[in-house]
Image (cartoon, rainbow, N blue to C red; front, side, top):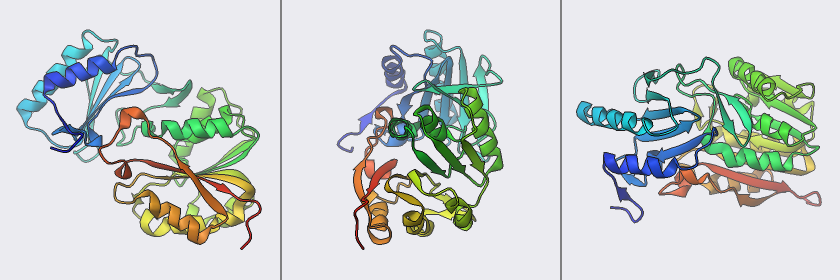
Length: 316
């Protein structure tokens, strides 16, 4: 057994949920993070609290009897918690179907994070439209965005844009290949009653649209939050470098870059070395701490949010 590994029974998981459910609010909270590898035999399980919904995801197939016992425990748990509904998603099945086991799901569901509202789709997508582990990244961007021009690359449903806007950003450019994700992103701004006059939404292939992205440069804050691998559009091991090479041409003199990486197989040094080689005017400042509820047995395999600052006085 690993140093920090903890063996748990189903009864132990219920106790864990009860402890983590104390003082719950309407805000999203991960109650059990098996994916972090800290609980022996449970790396296939995550449990989230979304206001009055308990959302359970299974990443691997289980023995039928064990799944029945687990579901029974969840039903027993919500009978004495704030939760009125139970949703089970089987991520190991193609399309990652979800099933409502107890109660019902509101048609216009949204999640709350630090007061922000973000639309959520629990029933029809592998990804719900919200990545909870990025909470501290969004908190950081909100804190530094006052009067800044922000470029949000791989914006998906534009949660970073919401954070920047609420932080007082002067302008935000959201770039993502998916038109449907950007449509949701626009709806997210309206959900938060944000005026979108200074916010743009561009369905560009980032690697092929640099000239268009450059038109609004220089940017004071640049967020790079790509998928690790998306067939036909982005592969971190070979494409991250292409973005880093362009940074000096689109960044303001004191630009801050938040470079994100969610690959378990690539460490922080992968990104740090890319900037050292291809954008040396940027200095590595720090790695943001991950959300406590997403703790991992090996932090290098977890989400990496790396902050870089450009030195206006740098000489080649």
